[in-house]
Image (cartoon, rainbow, N blue to C red; front, side, top):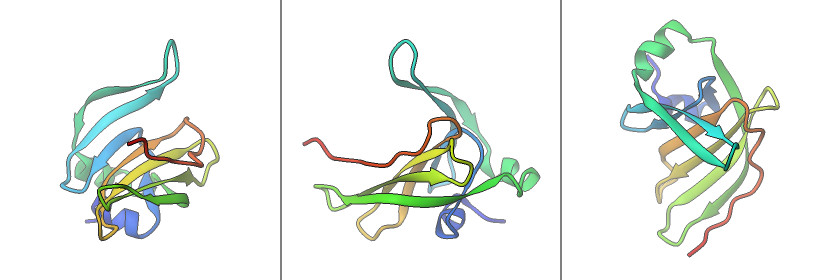
Length: 116
């Protein structure tokens, strides 16, 4: 049974609007742009159960940009293989996945910067 860390290491993400944490927790969420840009969180779900029934519902990802943050961790952005997808990921100081936010309709995220 794969977990989100293994999918990430294989350059794959589930095709499901959600934020996935490396500890196994996952929350449905959607990036909304009306009336103002915000993230709508819609409750926790069982990633393992979802993946077990939907193993083919994954997308190949391309990482466009990765920056080192002031806390020595990293932020990474990119796209999925279908063109309309995007993701933002937070990695620890050893570049291990902490969480990743996947959006099926956001379009690719191509740049990231840190405001201190």
